Length: 181
Image 1 (tube, helix red, strand yellow):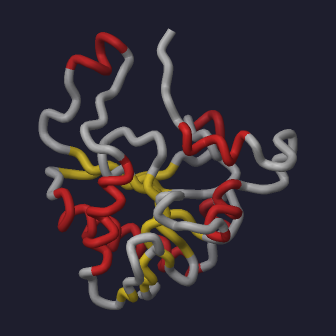
Image 2: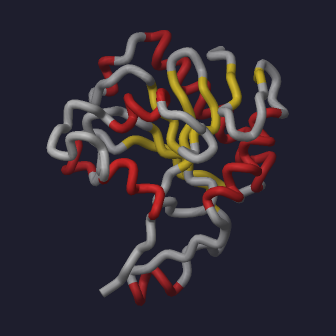
């Protein structure tokens, strides 16, 4: 049996009412203390950027609107534009920090049927890709190899976001503040 060590998940496991799904992790996370510990990279007025705890590749980020909805069509024009602009900023930061050869950008719409683990809160995945980054490991052993710790990726991307125009950069433990447009 394969084991995955994920100590950052203990807060979610030990939450006050584990049987309740009343609190969405994507709704609650922006209010938690210590953005760096929670991998929250950047905040806008309508959306934020979060590094994925279970990345497909180093730098795998998610752009998440604050509005709790699983329906893409529920976002108003301002929320939609702000989220997509933050996707652009995320790609810019990844380009600066990691120089990938390409990207996969998309949404899992439709809950379980679409393969998403959190289907009731819309989020866009931004996955940097490098030529040759898929090798024999996923094919033969159903295992991916992530070559950089998420905390190290956070530091690189936090710095890259901080270099962008229209960004208010705090200390490394706090997400950068970005303008929506």
